[in-house]
Image 1 (cartoon, one colour):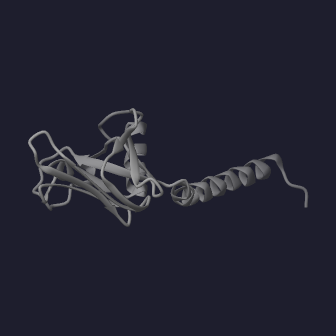
Image 2 (cartoon, one colour):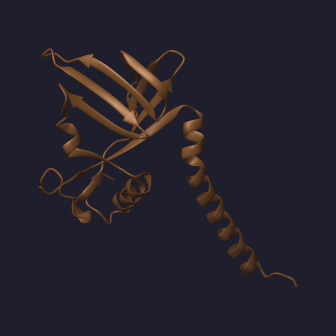
Image 3 (cartoon, helix red, strand yellow):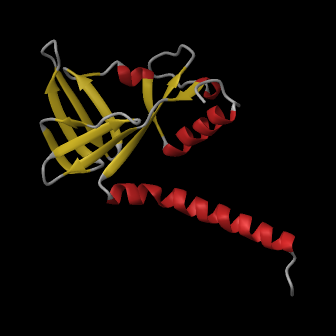
Length: 159
């Protein structure tokens, strides 16, 4: 059966969408193959208690944090958004999703950053970092959905 131009356009659009979806799904595999893990953080524009969830309409995206692991050197390089990379010190590294680094802060306290199975945590003298209450880790899917809503103007925030 001969196809019309409209049918070809629809088939190309569907094929393009499927190809884009496949690439989006394969992204974490490619990222981890490169020894990298990206942390997607969000914040709540309304006040909330420590463990209470944010109302979805009040969530906004923050910049991403990418951690590159070098297990053979026992080091981690981090860059936030488009910022310059920095090296974390005193690290024990298994892979991009599992590592721990410690340092002393300006007040003499011990700051420990670690990632376990892709979940980033930070403590100061054993207590959770206050910054993690404000900027919490979200799934890549949720972060991109909120980012799309921000960019399209359907949600207040940075465009």
